[in-house]
Image 1 (cartoon, rainbow, N blue to C red):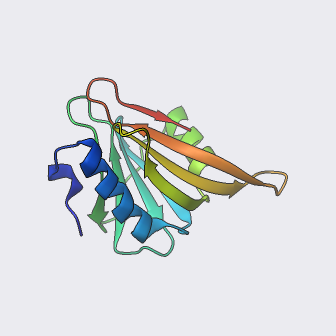
Image 2 (image 1 turned 180 degrees about the vertical axis):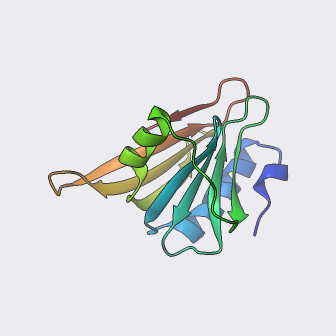
Length: 136
Protein backbone atom coordinates (compact mmCIF):
# COMPACT_ATOMS: atom_id res chain seq x y z
CA UNK A 1 0.00 0.00 0.00
CA UNK A 2 1.38 3.41 -0.92
CA UNK A 3 2.06 5.89 1.83
CA UNK A 4 0.65 9.00 0.19
CA UNK A 5 0.93 11.22 3.25
CA UNK A 6 4.73 11.21 3.07
CA UNK A 7 4.87 12.18 -0.61
CA UNK A 8 5.40 15.78 -1.56
CA UNK A 9 2.11 16.80 -3.13
CA UNK A 10 3.11 17.77 -6.66
CA UNK A 11 0.99 17.38 -9.79
CA UNK A 12 2.88 14.20 -10.79
CA UNK A 13 2.59 12.70 -7.29
CA UNK A 14 -1.13 13.46 -7.23
CA UNK A 15 -1.58 11.77 -10.62
CA UNK A 16 0.19 8.67 -9.27
CA UNK A 17 -2.05 8.68 -6.19
CA UNK A 18 -5.20 9.07 -8.32
CA UNK A 19 -4.16 6.25 -10.65
CA UNK A 20 -3.53 3.96 -7.67
CA UNK A 21 -6.86 4.91 -6.08
CA UNK A 22 -8.62 4.29 -9.40
CA UNK A 23 -7.17 0.78 -9.60
CA UNK A 24 -8.30 -0.07 -6.09
CA UNK A 25 -11.56 1.82 -5.64
CA UNK A 26 -13.27 2.03 -9.03
CA UNK A 27 -16.76 0.43 -9.01
CA UNK A 28 -16.75 0.30 -5.21
CA UNK A 29 -19.81 1.25 -3.24
CA UNK A 30 -19.22 3.98 -0.62
CA UNK A 31 -20.69 2.15 2.35
CA UNK A 32 -19.94 4.75 5.02
CA UNK A 33 -18.46 8.17 5.60
CA UNK A 34 -17.15 9.15 9.02
CA UNK A 35 -16.10 12.56 10.22
CA UNK A 36 -13.20 12.02 12.65
CA UNK A 37 -12.72 15.69 13.54
CA UNK A 38 -13.38 19.06 11.94
CA UNK A 39 -11.01 18.41 9.03
CA UNK A 40 -10.56 14.60 8.65
CA UNK A 41 -12.98 12.24 6.90
CA UNK A 42 -12.92 8.47 6.35
CA UNK A 43 -14.64 6.79 3.40
CA UNK A 44 -15.34 3.07 3.76
CA UNK A 45 -15.92 0.92 0.69
CA UNK A 46 -17.88 -2.26 0.08
CA UNK A 47 -15.38 -4.34 -1.91
CA UNK A 48 -12.06 -2.79 -0.91
CA UNK A 49 -11.78 -4.15 2.62
CA UNK A 50 -8.03 -3.64 3.09
CA UNK A 51 -8.40 -0.03 4.07
CA UNK A 52 -10.30 3.22 4.09
CA UNK A 53 -9.73 6.49 2.27
CA UNK A 54 -8.63 9.23 4.65
CA UNK A 55 -9.29 12.75 3.40
CA UNK A 56 -7.47 15.28 5.54
CA UNK A 57 -8.18 18.96 4.99
CA UNK A 58 -5.50 19.94 7.47
CA UNK A 59 -4.73 23.65 7.21
CA UNK A 60 -0.95 23.16 6.86
CA UNK A 61 -0.70 19.92 4.88
CA UNK A 62 -3.92 18.58 3.32
CA UNK A 63 -3.68 15.07 1.84
CA UNK A 64 -5.56 11.92 1.01
CA UNK A 65 -4.37 8.41 1.73
CA UNK A 66 -5.50 4.82 1.92
CA UNK A 67 -5.06 3.67 5.49
CA UNK A 68 -5.27 0.19 6.92
CA UNK A 69 -8.52 -0.85 8.54
CA UNK A 70 -8.73 0.59 11.98
CA UNK A 71 -11.13 -0.06 14.81
CA UNK A 72 -14.51 1.60 14.39
CA UNK A 73 -14.10 5.35 14.52
CA UNK A 74 -16.60 7.53 16.33
CA UNK A 75 -18.22 10.09 14.08
CA UNK A 76 -18.65 13.71 15.05
CA UNK A 77 -22.27 14.77 14.82
CA UNK A 78 -23.17 17.91 12.92
CA UNK A 79 -24.70 19.33 9.80
CA UNK A 80 -21.55 18.81 7.68
CA UNK A 81 -21.45 15.12 8.55
CA UNK A 82 -25.19 14.77 7.90
CA UNK A 83 -24.90 16.49 4.51
CA UNK A 84 -21.90 14.40 3.46
CA UNK A 85 -23.70 11.19 4.38
CA UNK A 86 -26.81 12.31 2.53
CA UNK A 87 -24.93 13.33 -0.63
CA UNK A 88 -22.03 10.83 -0.79
CA UNK A 89 -22.93 7.66 1.13
CA UNK A 90 -24.22 4.77 -1.00
CA UNK A 91 -22.61 6.14 -4.16
CA UNK A 92 -20.69 3.94 -6.60
CA UNK A 93 -17.24 5.28 -7.54
CA UNK A 94 -16.83 5.66 -11.31
CA UNK A 95 -13.60 7.66 -11.59
CA UNK A 96 -10.90 9.34 -9.51
CA UNK A 97 -8.73 11.94 -11.21
CA UNK A 98 -6.57 14.99 -10.65
CA UNK A 99 -7.95 18.13 -12.27
CA UNK A 100 -5.87 20.46 -14.48
CA UNK A 101 -2.48 19.37 -13.11
CA UNK A 102 -3.36 21.09 -9.86
CA UNK A 103 -3.81 19.85 -6.28
CA UNK A 104 -7.47 19.17 -6.89
CA UNK A 105 -8.93 15.64 -6.90
CA UNK A 106 -12.31 14.68 -8.28
CA UNK A 107 -14.06 11.53 -7.10
CA UNK A 108 -16.91 10.87 -9.51
CA UNK A 109 -19.72 8.58 -8.42
CA UNK A 110 -23.31 7.68 -9.23
CA UNK A 111 -26.02 7.53 -6.63
CA UNK A 112 -29.70 6.65 -6.69
CA UNK A 113 -31.84 9.58 -5.50
CA UNK A 114 -35.21 9.58 -3.73
CA UNK A 115 -36.98 9.15 -7.09
CA UNK A 116 -34.90 6.04 -7.94
CA UNK A 117 -33.01 7.86 -10.65
CA UNK A 118 -29.26 7.43 -11.12
CA UNK A 119 -27.59 10.77 -10.53
CA UNK A 120 -23.94 11.53 -11.32
CA UNK A 121 -22.13 13.47 -8.62
CA UNK A 122 -18.62 14.64 -7.92
CA UNK A 123 -16.74 15.04 -4.68
CA UNK A 124 -14.08 17.66 -5.35
CA UNK A 125 -11.23 17.85 -2.86
CA UNK A 126 -8.97 20.89 -3.02
CA UNK A 127 -5.65 19.97 -1.39
CA UNK A 128 -4.13 23.45 -1.50
CA UNK A 129 -2.42 24.43 1.78
CA UNK A 130 -4.25 27.22 3.62
CA UNK A 131 -7.07 27.03 1.04
CA UNK A 132 -8.31 23.44 1.36
CA UNK A 133 -11.93 22.74 0.45
CA UNK A 134 -14.46 19.95 -0.04
CA UNK A 135 -17.23 20.39 -2.61
CA UNK A 136 -20.01 17.99 -3.61
